[in-house]
Amino acid sequence: MAHLAPAPDRNVPPEQPLPRWDDRRLEIVLGNLLRSGVAVSAAVVFLGACVYLYRHAHEPADYRIFRGEPSDFRTIPGIFQSVLNWRGRGFIQLGLLFLIATPIARVAFSVVGFALERDRLYVAFTLIVLLVLLYSLIGSGLTV
Amino acid sequence: MTILAFTFAVAIVSFAAGLLGSLTGLGGGVVLVPLLTIFFHVDIRYAIGASLVSVIATSSGAAAAYVKEGFSNIRIGMFLEIATTAGALFGAYLASWIPTTAIAVILGAMLLYSAYISRRPRPPELRNLPPDPVATRLRLNGRFPDLGGERTYNVQRVPAGFSFMFGAGALSGLLGIGSGAVKVLAMDQAMRIPFKVSTTTSNFMIGVTAAASAGVYLSRGYVDPGLSMPVMLGVLAGSLLGSRILVKADTKSLRLVFSLVIFVLGLQMLYKGFWGRM
Image 1 (tube, each protein chain N blue to C red):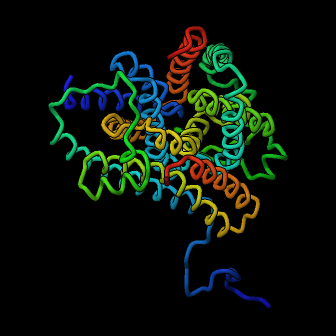
Image 2: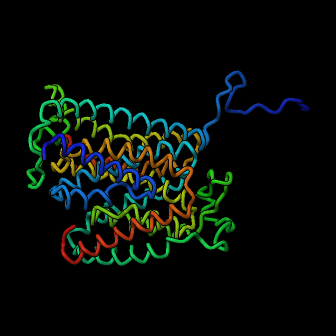
Image 3: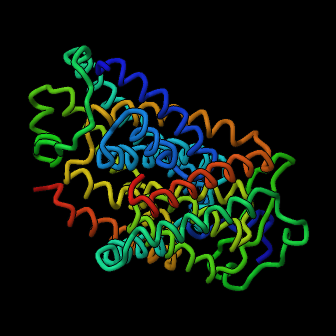
């Protein structure tokens, strides 16, 4: 009964000294997730910016009248098609899609993180937010 | 103006918007929408699309730093996001029933009042309050690195804050702007959360609220690549600088900046309400 060493944690075998899932670790992972999402989308937008400016830099800029974007730049299949055609603005829209996906991925990973912490209440909270987000995105007509 | 000159000018303005947005927890749209429409003669619908892009960029760009350094409280953020996302759906539903101009006037008046009350630090008797049972059950109480060392705090009046957040979401669904201001006010004034935690947690949350509506605006053709590109890159750079400044800034000056920005936002709302446009 009288062990001198402290009782080993039930969840973590002593030969694997991984830190347990707590809020601090979740914060670090979420921070890294946000940072990578932003870095990837900025890089793609920047690539698109180079192509777009190289081709159109000296044309006049005019946003006075709203024309709406052509379908190449407002649906996911259209954006992929214009990226395949190596169009600068296609790359910019692809980068913006990554940017929009970043907070959604953050919520999705939070569900996993709270599950690893075995915090059922917060798994439920984040699942509700994720479902509302997905509902509003699916209803948006982006995938048409 | 050529596209090259336009791109650089918009990028510089967006840099300032991202800096202010990340310092105040309001996102970049507050500054960006009026500047784009008034000085760059951009149609309001393109400006709204660009503003949504700027809110997501400010939020994710600065949140990476704020979350890692322990300013944003992810539990408060996640819990209150239920209220804001549900409120946003409700607001979008209400939009066809209620005149948005009337709401803009009410919100404008409320923001002017809030600019007045939130400019000063919290009185000492309202700090270090005992824990609230609801906040303890939801594990909302936390700690953050204050200038003088780590400081703990106890969240107060959770139901009031939650209701405010539902209102913030409904407003963003109805008006498409101003939800960040209500978020900060709900946490700062109703829930008595320290100011830096309130603004950084609002900053953490606004990206999710904006992402929920970004899909709709993108598919309706409001998000123009030529305009959104300098906005996104400029705002991102501004928000990264802002997140470095906030860590070292004292709360008193942050409150003054916040108060000033929501004062301008309140005037914008009144203008929108009385003249029907931004």
